[in-house]
Image 1 (cartoon, rainbow, N blue to C red):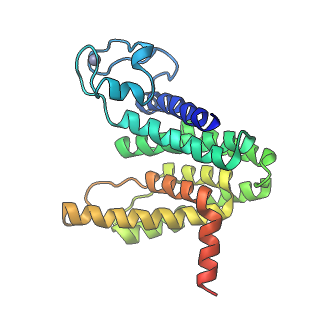
Image 2: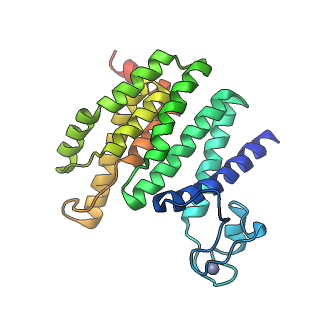
Image 3: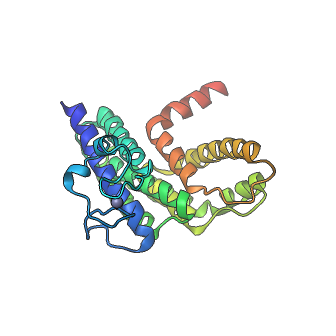
Amino acid sequence: MWIVGSIAFGAIVGSFLNVCIYRIPKGESIILPGSHCPHCQRSIPFYDNIPLVSYLLLRAKCRYCQGPISLQYPLVEGVTALSSFLLFSRFGISWSYLFYFSFLASLIVITVIDLFHQIIPDVISLPGIGVGLIASFILPQLTFLNSLIGVLLGGGSLFLVATFYQWLFKREGMGGGDVKLLAMIGAFLGWKAVILTILLGSLIGSIIGMIVMMLKGKDLKYAIPFGPFLSLGAALSLFYGETIITLYLNLNR
Ligand SMILES: [Zn+2]
C-alpha cells in the first residue's frame, strides 16, 4: 500500500516537474495557467493529465490535434516515481524522505533544463543551497558544519572541475551554473559527497563523451552539458556513497 503510494506520489510530483521544466526557462509562472497542449494550445483536462497513465492511453498524441507528446513527460514522471520509491524504501515517511526527495526532484529539473538549454537556473540552485543548510539542522545524518563545508567546497571546486573538464574535452565547459549546483549538492550531502560527485560525474561524463565521439566522429564541437552528470553523480552518492567509499578503501588496503 505504502509502496504504491510512494510511487503514485512521485509520479504526481514528476508531472509538476514537467511543468517546471517547460516554463522556468521561459520565465513563465509554474502555477498558472493550467496545463495546455504546446501544439494547439487547448487546455488539457484532468483525465488526460494523469501521470504515466495518460501518455499510454493517448498513445503519445494530443486528443484534439494529434500533436506528439514528448517522451520527456513519462520519463520525468517515471524517474521521479522511482526516486520517491527508493527514498521511501530507505527512510520511510520522515524528514530525510522529504528533504532528499525535494533534492532529487531539483536535480531532475536541472538535468532536463541543462540538456535542452545549457543553463542551470539560479531559481532552483540558490534556494536549494539554503534548504540544504536548513536540512542539516533536522537530518540526523548531516551536521551543519559538514553541510557548510560542502557548500564552500562545492562552490570552490570551480578550479578543480574546470581544469579536469578542460583537460578531458579540450575546451572550457564549466559555467557558474555548475558551481552553484555543486554548492547545492554539498549543502544536502556534505563535503565528502561533493568530491565523490565530481569524480563520478567526470567518470560517467567521460564515458558518455567517448561514446558520443565514437558515434558522431571527430571531436566534441557541440556542448555536452556537465550538469546532468553532476546530478547523476550526486544521486549515486546519496544512495551508494558509503558503499563506494568502503569498496574503494578496501581495494587500496
Ligand atoms: Zn494539441
